[in-house]
Amino acid sequence: MFKIGVMASGGGSNFKAIIDRIGEGDLEAQCKFLITNNGGCGAVNHATTYGIPVYHISGKTHPDEAEYEKALCAVLDERPVDLLILAGYMKKLPDCLVEKMPDRILNIHPSLLPKFGGKGFWGLHVHEAVLAAHETESGPTVHLVSSEIDQGRILAQRKVPVMPDDTPASLQARVLEQEHDIYWRTIKEYGESLQK
Ligand code: GRF
Image (cartoon, rainbow, N blue to C red; front, side):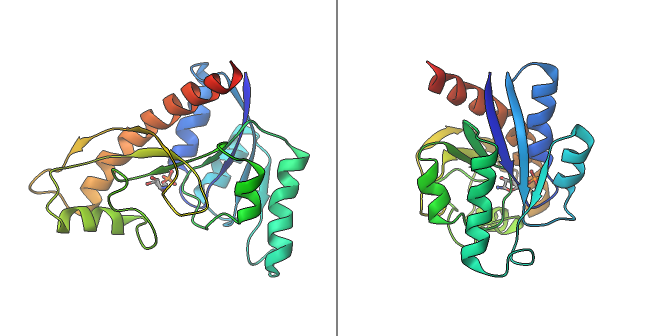
């Protein structure tokens, strides 16, 4: 049994998929907290439903950058976890956090990295770029987080076809469905490998 903490800013469908798998007993882990920079997001609703403590830490709650970073690190000190899981967290992590948890922070990205990753590639923009490049396949990547956006070691990828009549939204939905399956499996495999 290992401990995870999750960071999310949006709807939180990946977060929900992970805590559902924990609830089903497929993923033997405990989720100790959700950190969000968006107090009104769907991920917060899921955390509340499941009784998971929520920390709202943002530019609004902590306008001073140094205080913001300190608050993030304080959560990790208060509730230590084996893995920190980014599930649609829309802010770049401060270096102090990445250095605090080397090879212990995972992210999921909705393209086959290194393609369509880095600054500007988020949300529908990723899928728009995939379609504009006439790619025939796309899919999610789970990777370790390093100080450069979307550049850490790749742990898992899964391909889905790009259909001729795809819109960014239809491609996003097809990729997201696979995200919900690949993320918890990779967390399980990676988390268990750290315990050996
Ligand atoms: C997903 O597409 C994920 O790949 C990206 O952010 C999105 C989060 O979606 N990092 P959700 O909030 O989990 O529904």
